[in-house]
Image (tube, helix red, strand yellow):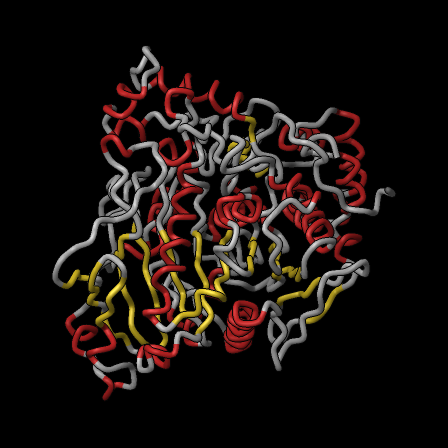
Length: 577
């Protein structure tokens, strides 16, 4: 195999794995948003984590809308699912059902157990208000609760007015946030749904509550530490059983997610428990962590976490009595979601996809051109799925040292990388550092995933390239101007009315947004994202990647060369390749 051939790990090794940015070289702390980053971004990312919570209740106007407004009839807001009747809310573009329980509250003896069926209720349940978020720090203005296993269903007007057809494709969105923050209500899905799909957004357990591995918590099958992934599967089972009542087709379900949500999609592809629960998958900026921890590693960390919250006896009884605030406050920096426990995950996702031992469905996989542009100005970078605290501002004097620190490589390798990204080719040292980290940690791992998956299933690759994409999370004053960076594409797929920074799309960007939404929905409907406005070829040996740029996408063939993927295959950041 030559150096131009992308490779995924041949075997599971000890490495970090998951989140919107975690882990680093060796034992560097694992955290999506480090304490330092949270301090810098408190005014911005706190709001980003909970923008959907800022307006949780349906307004009187929403509740009173009828068919005369062009949305749906009052009857269309009432649906009966397996557990009981739901009263949703009519909107200008359809109907939304908010805060729908898909599993029993994972509290008391159900803490750190597989999700259980939700109890039936009598009467009509109010589904006009979003549920509290799963416990996380910083807290949401709408509150948090361990009782958080809820989902939201957005039904377009066409389906709401013809509920019996059961023929619309379904997109189940798994939120990002490094497995520590976020919720389904962060994503306003009416525009995406209006293109002809039902969109379901879900909550799942986060942090220690979702991903603590400990021998005292293992179930009879040995499953431990993947509770958040099991929640996602429970939500998918709910969709299989109930989505037909909303006009959706349970045989055309696509799972999709960004960042930690994208990695979640990969892990569901690799999980035997998810077999048959979806028919297509979309991975957005999620290919950064192809190797998950072994159970032994994770349980070692779990014992340390138990001691930190006062359970020196290491018993399940003690752990289940720890106040939730203490669990959130003592979130260990080394916690790595996604554990090869032999049950939920039998291998790392890189191994599963490279060897064909995964749920074989069509895949869209993509990245944004400068993923790290949002991180580097804050003094961090994302390596091996983890946020690595950098040495400070990058300049000509510390360029090679910064490379070694951020990527966890030796001096000779750092010098080789610096030579491949000479400062003379970039406007500033920080720009060069951003580009090389983006290539190393996102673009080339995505390319490797494309090549591995394409050997088994139809695979469609993209690169989001709009250099003028509005930056809604980090202000320009902190050094993060408009760019195609981590999260940038979300504004083109979902409404974000409460994002922390103002921003709007130009006419050309709105056209790109519409094209992307149509492609995502067409993919959910047919397994191919090609539309009348944009032909999207399958990834093959010519490495066809669709460049998503305004006003219209175009095929690019030099992705691997542009991002120096042969170099990064030789560096092998993710272990033996």
